[in-house]
Amino acid sequence: MRTPFIVGNWKMNLTLSEVNDFLKQLTDKLPDIKKVECAIAASPIFLESLTNYCKNSPLKASAENCFYKDKGAYTGEVSPYALSDMGVDYVMLGHSERRKYFNESNKSINKKVKAVLNNHMIPIICCDETMTKQKHDDHMDWVVNPVSEALKGVSVSDAKKIVIGYEPSWAIGTGKSASVNETQEACCLIRKTIDELYNDDVANQVRILYGGSVNDKNAQELMQQKDVDGVLAGTASLKPKEFLKIINYIK
Image (cartoon, rainbow, N blue to C red):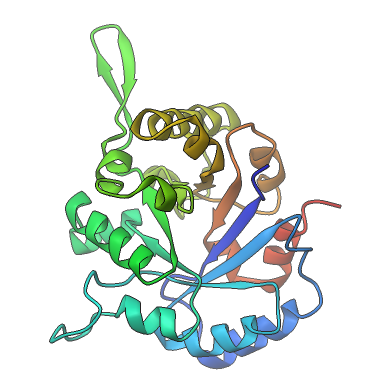
């Protein structure tokens, strides 16, 4: 049984005082971690506050990105070794905004996946941008290359730990979410791809999330789908009350 997983992605938003106020409003209001796991992906400048809060809370801390080297002369980059040392649990990798604005490739994302795993954290591998339907003759094919490329060289034991986020780029921040059927179709295909890369056991353990204009009104219906194990919330995660409605969808 896969534990539902809900992740809030703050992106480049909020200030330190707003972050501290946000976290205070979550206190004693989070669901039982055995029923629903929840995490916040935050900018590096907020991770100290977030990880300190998480020490006494069921909330998990996630970085929004990292480099693929542990240390060195890489000005401006974030060390996965340092993230692990400060208590970060997850690292989001390959978000479509990283691919679009910073030209991240499948190859660099694969390096980051391995670096995160080597530092005892769990990667949340985001895919789309190139994972879309393409028409060939009279039928539609899914392109799952980002998933396959991100997992190159990843062992079976490590593959079981990963989380994959399916985020259609046209739905991110637009207010237009993918339909329930589209979401299930995409997440089912991702699971089948993992089955083909590894085996059925791995495929059944990997959690697959949907992201793209998620809110407290559509999250519950999305998570009722067989292959949708959780959601990635962007704008909705910036407001404590709305985020709490999403993560407490199980009554």
